[in-house]
Length: 329
DNA sequence: ACACTCGGACCGTCAATTAT
DNA sequence: TAATTGACGGTCCGAGTGTT
Ligand SMILES: [Zn+2]
Ligand SMILES: [Zn+2]
Image (cartoon, rainbow, N blue to C red; front, side, top):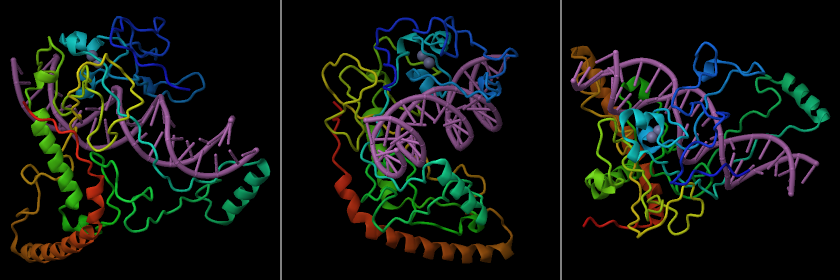
């Protein structure tokens, strides 16, 4: 079933007047599902199941940026509270990726006979997986990602699992280093560049008019507001066709700017802030040699990793379709 | 006391895979 | 084609921190 439509911009008032699906009342008062006022997940539904946290389908941009609870109503209660209702609009959802190859699924439930057989078999072994087959340790051939595809098509902001870079030394070395290799750095730089190109623009330029920047607007999402004419398109992919637009606004003239990365520096450990980093965490002399020794180990390891990465590198350039360059001014 | 920040647990949706 | 799996991309809890 296609989920219910995302409310168009002129949307006024929630459709759930009865409050059936919403967790917040129309007037902005939290609708406590639990008589004692416990948060939803601490309650239980009629079947005695622990109640799940209910999410809105689409938080407004302000709540999204603040990672705070939103509401179906527009303006949402939080924006009303902070008097930023003019920027209270639905955020834009990315289109889900297609064509991703998956590994083999676990066995499905079958007939009762099969199930019994399986159960028996499971008892013979450890039985820790119950009726299901044990998880298959996928081994991905070199040069393929976890989906068996060459390269990693859209890993711009995701935590790409560097399956080829297991480092068993992290814990004993004391300083976890994220070996992002070329890709990661490149992406980070890319993100920064984009940030400079667009995010650095006075943020208000890309916000709805009438929006005055407000202290309660955190920045780490950049501007994800879909502007008129700003078709949603992420930098790496989805060039022309973007069939599934959840929330549509009247298209104006296109200055299609890709939305910036939420956090470009996400996984690089900050040398400055980290309390006990590699440098001189313990001044004792006896440990110093150990540190040296380990760092030489580390150097060797990183050399190996770099070498491995260099082997894979030729792949990635092809995926780097040059993004629509947004020329400032 | 309140607002802000943000890591990460949790949730809903839906494409890929598998069974029929 | 229907059923199911699995994970992507989202929401938002809650702890820590900063500000008034
Ligand atoms: Zn909101
Ligand atoms: Zn809002």
